[in-house]
Length: 329
Image 1: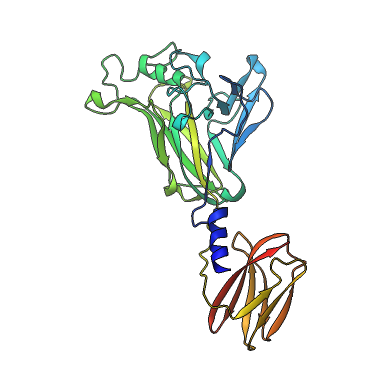
Image 2: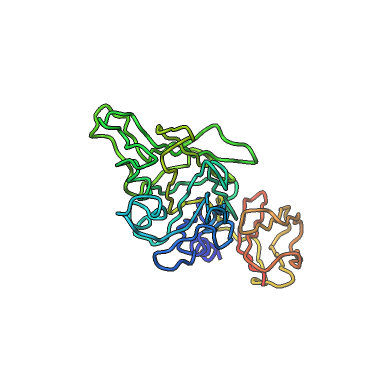
């Protein structure tokens, strides 16, 4: 039985750092298309994250927050090509990816939020891959009718576009942050200046446990109406933790016989000699959902209060701990 339970752990992926990767491939898109909220969804879910979208029909349709895309145009500059990454596709040659647009004039807030869901709530976001869009890339590289060429005419202007990531936990905004420079021209040696043109993994474990992430952007190119640089960033392969499964110490001693197993209405625990012990039934998330004292050679445990599934049956006595798998049918 011990070997069976160990195999079960491996098969269903219970480890100390279970993870989910949100790669947006689970969102249905036509080839070379995008979702920007005009369909009325209000946002997009992939894996353990939800990406809010803000859309209005005003002025022919305006959006901010998040969009999902698989467009691949790496040559067309300007606003008409706002949904393509400069990489020409998703991270690790995937098709779909997410992008965020932070609008200073609505319809959404002047930041982007990534909400955690399911078992990732209150856990650590390990990291995510980030790159530039084709539109902001060429805007910073060459300048356009709204934004300056980074570095200026001489190439010596210390320009940058910075993405700052913080976390919310229990309604409180963290003071810690992770900064990622989508472009950086602050080097004395201009040959070191860069605009990000590939998917880059950003480690977020330093932020710790989170309920959501907040993204803000800062640029050195500021005009009378605010930042001139197009405030877009592209995201793929968001890795979230699914919680921590407790370490289970499996002993070789089998002082108790446990039957029937699988069980329906009850299970019987039988030992050769009476002894004081404590029984615990633990669900797959590591939560103790039932406990009872044992002081006889045979005890019947009512299982009607348990949902169908797999549990740990743990017996603690002065001789140690015995752990068995229990299947409720």
